[in-house]
Image (cartoon, rainbow, N blue to C red):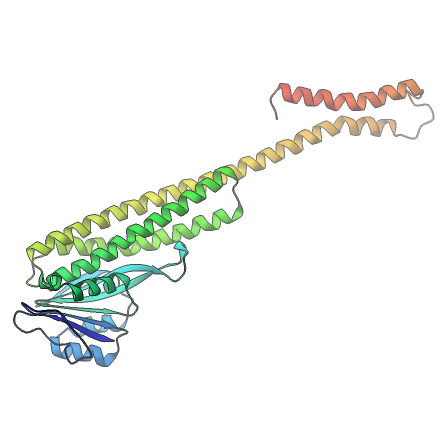
Length: 320
């Protein structure tokens, strides 16, 4: 689907569908062209009208790019990533890719899937003409800022999941905790791999001088860079906490195993003298000691006294 937002020096915002309005802006105009579920013909139309480099068009055909910033004469080509989950499970996060062409007076965004941050900015800009009049670069800032802010929500969800795991480990660890820890760890590694180059992209946008990027908007990109640094640090902190939770899980399970082995050892030690007594007096001989009834009752009493004495001794030595 191809749609175009057009805003002039005055008047309301106009939104047109189709490729008729997808062309460079007139003098004093700001145009935002949004292309979703792109195909070859639509990208070829944009390349012909805007003079985009074939390499950038090729990147838009294959959405497997890492975050990057490239300069092609009079426009910038930017690739940024967000995240989405088809389920409510935070471990099912997948990267969401957005390509953007930023030129003087225009912004072209290309994406395969629906992006909530972009949809929200489109709705705001369509209802408030003052936002797009601040420049196409400011529209790009609004999109990436909303995308990065959504990462904070994801990190809060990961933090909640981590707190739940830690509480479970302390109270009663189960085997499923281990699988959950590794799933969260994979999610954090994936986010770290995506956000590491993206942080460099916004560091360049905050410093780079280009005709399509005003000095005022560069300050806003600096704020996005600061947010990404904080997110990156939070990811590293969460990874460390997951490592600590993994070690705690293993330590608690090892301690539980030691407790079980200690109890079994005590039980074996208690029955060892009883086994000896019953085995000795169970021999089939004619002349056995303690054959008389009173002495036999003494042997039976010793079978009860010996384990009780051993248990008292174990308790005194604090072995259990």
